[in-house]
Image (cartoon, rainbow, N blue to C red; front, side, top):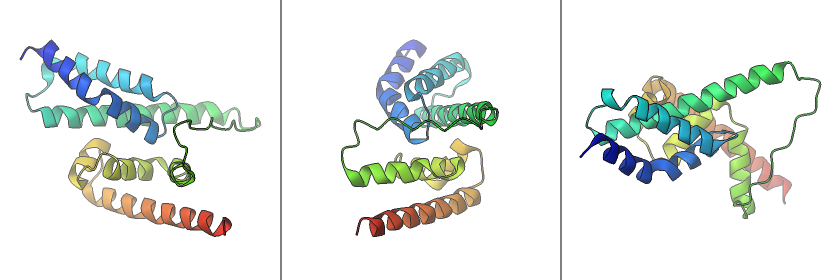
Length: 165
């Protein structure tokens, strides 16, 4: 299959998944992040292996790194605006159920690394080794971040449940 056709198929299969992944990782503009990830993949197409699983893993890693970079830049920009009140996130029109909303809110409050591994593990259902590859850390770090992230989520969701009683 020609490179362009292969890229078109890859885009069709993974574009919406990458947009959702970007949103879950906390990107303010998940569509733009996904588009940029595909642009970077396309630019690197001549260096890619023919193994589609490896290409998808590389695409995941590109997206994770783009979200991280944008979050770092936003943190630096906010550093100078510390006297302004933080702006509230717009409500998610898709999240109509209170439980889903609570999980997404709790997930958004996790530290970035913990959020990444929780989302990659439970949303993409990636094995620990692939999560380590996508995030650029060791498998042991993935395990510890996953454990800590799940513990924090459980605590926050338990607190929310007790408030509603």
